[in-house]
Length: 290
Ligand code: NAP
Image (cartoon, rainbow, N blue to C red; front, side):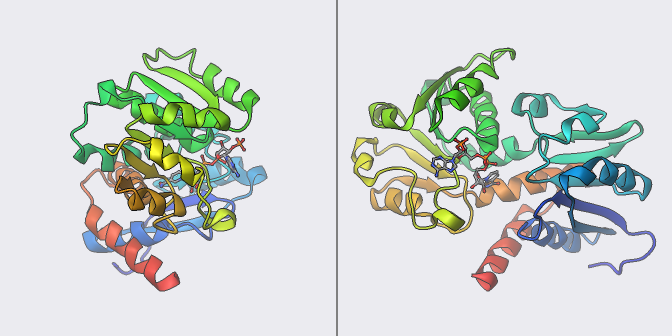
């Protein structure tokens, strides 16, 4: 790392809590590798202090920052502009300073798509299934629409929330058809899909060792299917362990995490960044804290 001086530029992440964030590990690893005069700092910001934090960040010269739970949506009215991707997702995870204030985007879409790019699938014929209908599911819907998937099934536990989720896309010029389903209908649609994505937290922390899907349902899934879990720790989750046992292709959330961070750093530094260094720093850190 370059020595921190009065010229060192500030980057960071805001959230509450922010102490579990892995972004400082991978961003500072890339900063060190590039030998640029930056530092990336976690800031714990309560919801009631969000507007103040943004004003202070502008006044002390912060160049840009990431946003995590619970500010990804509530930050929207505090920004001077947001990208079309952020508008579609309805949430921002990366901002940078401009002459008129903070501008924001959502790099989770690029992050989600990164590991799928290596598969030569005809996405225009695939109808993926998304388990969960929260914030991350929104970024996944935008990603899948970008891939050209004609139809997306979204599975959730609350019909009211599912209806609102479906409704929220109607104002956008979206070619993709969104079909919402409750969990009891999952077994009816599984055989149609080649891409199944878990965006629920089942498999991590409180739900560790649990899978979002009943293990009896694996037999319904084609052996061509890709099973994608957005969770990056633990890895593999119970969901991915079971998928592997079936011989299916699996993807965990670590590439998404790395690529959303790398895209943010590229935006701030306006240069390419070492994705491999970021990825390695995370793996090494996760081995230490395991
Ligand atoms: P969120 O907005 O809270 O959404 C979670 C979704 O999961 C909601 O639809 C929720 O249903 C559902 N859910 C929660 N507990 C459930 C349960 N016990 N049974 C069935 N459904 C349940 O969270 P998020 O921001 O979308 O994040 C979701 C996951 O994605 C987290 O594990 C997060 O770590 C991961 N993620 C990873 C990355 C990455 O870079 N790899 C990026 C973003 C998120 P209700 O709405 O009915 O409560």
